Length: 241
Image (cartoon, rainbow, N blue to C red; front, side, top):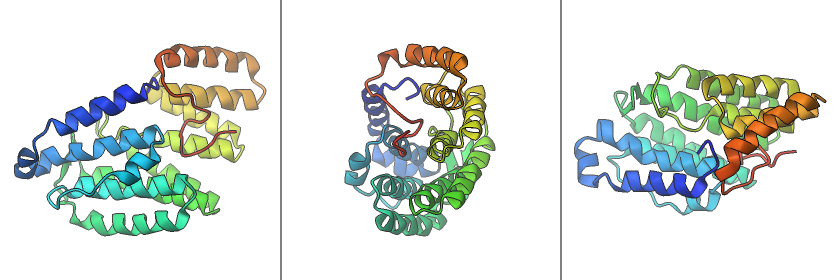
């Protein structure tokens, strides 16, 4: 995911989830079913909006997966410019959240830690595209704070860094210095990830810091050498500038 290898990432995450028998998921839902939502995070990562919208619903014994599917659909519709549709998915997501048991595991964290990342991220994407940009940015910052509070896990329990969405939105707002700090903070957490390297290079370039921007861009090109997608933004939810 962090080196832009979309086909490999989607293939592997789907193979992992499909390799867990549904009967096992049903019998051990408090632990096993949290894996079901991971493919949606990968699909969001690579902007595969139509794949998200084409995905069918999940059984009732997979409440966390069902909630994440609704959130992914909301983000996908917002990215496609369908704010009204995104809001309907947001309502479905919010209705699904109370159905997820409080003790539901997602790695070392429970749903009470994971969903506080998802809820403001979804709200932020919708608010931003609705034109309520400051409110949207505030929600994305809330998602970042909740993500930072998650317990350590490798890979992380939430594999879609909220800073990538926040940084992309700040770049759209031409708040380049703020975006620069967001990307630096993300690289401190996830060293050499391509999405934040691109964002950092862009933010430096826009501030006229050409020498440093060139050095960061060279690091990005190295990391992205095996990528099968080209990006103009740290989140494909934003077109880039």
